[in-house]
Length: 291
Image 1 (tube, rainbow, N blue to C red):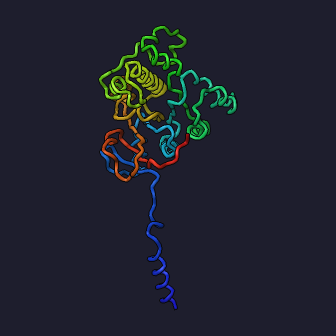
Image 2 (spheres, rainbow, N blue to C red):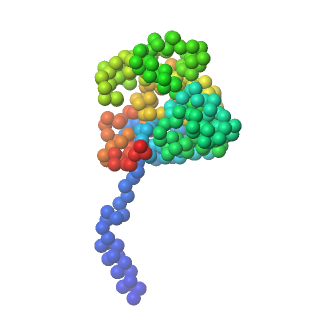
Image 3 (cartoon, helix red, strand yellow):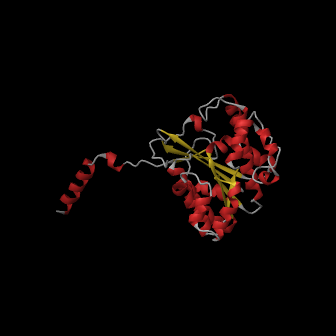
């Protein structure tokens, strides 16, 4: 009877559709050259960095989940030396952020008064809560959007008219950048990222954001610390943009970059995504969105 039972189990298993045992990965992780790599290797590399630039697709749930998971693992490795910062919070809201982190104001007041992105509660609140729970600094790095919008409409020279109080929320003036870098040249001549005609003002507005975010990273970093920054992938892809500003000010800074891409089939990295970052997260294009 025992042999008959074993034989029947084998027949049943063979008869099952093989597709029931196939797994669909939520993401596949690659190195810059397109070779697959384990998540643990990314943690190891990030743990040894001075700055980690985590480039996300703003509405991608896998990128946001991995941001939180990586932050947890980096905290396990680096403890109180870890500093968090994000594009999604504007520099003039740093006081509100600090008051919330210290417990001076409530969560409700923080969420009411800070100019939060519409996907804050699903995508960025877990990171803020993690920092608060572990008493970590969270830096609001981005230029206030009203100034970035003025640059988009009037050009970078409009910043010269700001008050000293306003200048405290952006990178030191004058802000100079290399327009020949592909990340800015595309915006000047093509505008393909936004689907509208390119212009120097578009590149200026992008550069002002990059310069300001890197300024506040460097203001809050010192040797021995690890600063993990969450930003849209365009701000750090191809080792340009924020990377360029960081290395211009400190060539010895060890930076690890991460990018997120969406592909119909994530099992092999598409040629166009090669070289985007040290580590590239490929997510199925069918993945649900957070907004």
